[in-house]
Image (cartoon, rainbow, N blue to C red; front, side, top):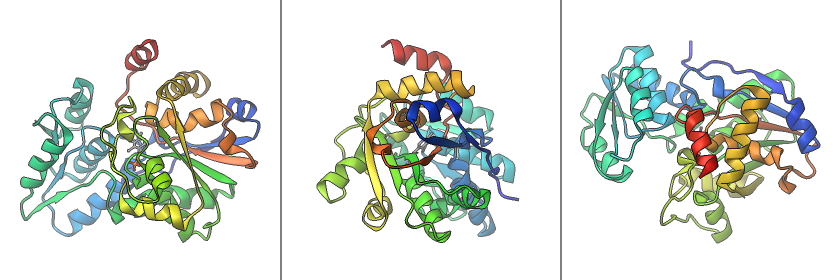
Length: 304
Ligand SMILES: *Cc1c(COP(=O)(O)O)cnc(C)c1O
């Protein structure tokens, strides 16, 4: 049995009325560790365990680290997560709940990641948050489920951080013979590393991340994600933090699910009837979820 669950796919009446088209939701926010990440991370962890790994190491204080911690607990393999000093108490608390060892090191993710990499011994496995073919293979299972459901959307809307989700969804579409189904790739201002790269026609590294959607905060997308932009129809869209936050609040009222702004970014397209959805009769939004934002935090950001 895989570590992820098959998630519900539901039509959204409120979002369909607002967007003026049929909007369906793939509810990966309901994965046990709170985001789609367990699909890829779970598969990678199982493969590493089969190859003899005795410990999993991650440098993500976000949903990737949480997914590793969950997978380790389910597989009875110890997990160490190295996070920078900037990591919120909430994130550390969630990792501790999953019984992971949390090591706080360095002022930024770069330093935490360096320590994590230096700790990798012969029997340890390092789990990258987005740049690993095993992750994409696992993320692709969500598209297998969509295909089996019998619904064929005219477009798929998803959020982009480092591009692991995008690479997995594109892989899933192609392995199911749906290579013509366009992807609408959403980022927030200040975290738009895919958008900048697509405009420049080469892989661009952002100087810094200024968006509150920290789960989208990769300065550079993985090479595979950028490659997909020339191998698959992809519309790149950038929304404001404000739009993403507003979508989180409205989605909580409409569907009673609390998601991170990283996920709100995708939902904002439907809430704001974005022009980029023009021409699509039926769209499927990947509700990628995210466990690190509390209602208090969303309110605080919204007021700020
Ligand atoms: C990781 C994450 C993303 C972005 O996924 P990438 O694979 O980094 O592009 C989006 N939303 C949530 C909630 C995430 O945890």
